[in-house]
Length: 223
Image (cartoon, rainbow, N blue to C red; front, side, top):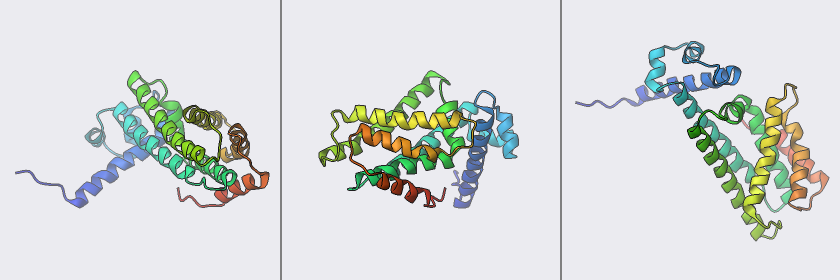
């Protein structure tokens, strides 16, 4: 006879798995992927090796699970940020970029894992990273297409525009992740916003840009 796990039992299992993943985020972000062992994660999580292998095949399986969760979380952040764009393009664009930067800033260990530790692990992971990037670009392209149809921007190729836009975000975030100073990522928001508004030839006022930034910085994202 096959017995089904009770709801309470499944919830306990889910919490244990989440605890291991949350702990692994901290360990990977400090030691790096190659510098981290299963033993490191087990000891930091105060659990047993048997419990670890109940949920994960090995370190790579754990990291892949973690990476999938992180990439989905940041994808959701990107989608939510673009929802800030409305009829007041300069204000909305400013809020969108600042929102995304603030989410990354609040989740620096996750960003480090996704953008630094996951690079060059193996060919399969590189394909996964490429798929994630394409997902981000496709979603952004959809928003730019809407803006183009509404005659808000003049874009000859929305895909190229999306690649360039995501590229500016990526490079600024990478600069911040690799910088040992205590500067906030959102301190880059103003220059990044102005650059993209000018690149897209969107009319803007300085006051609207600063208003958009301030609205997001003064908002509790509950993260």
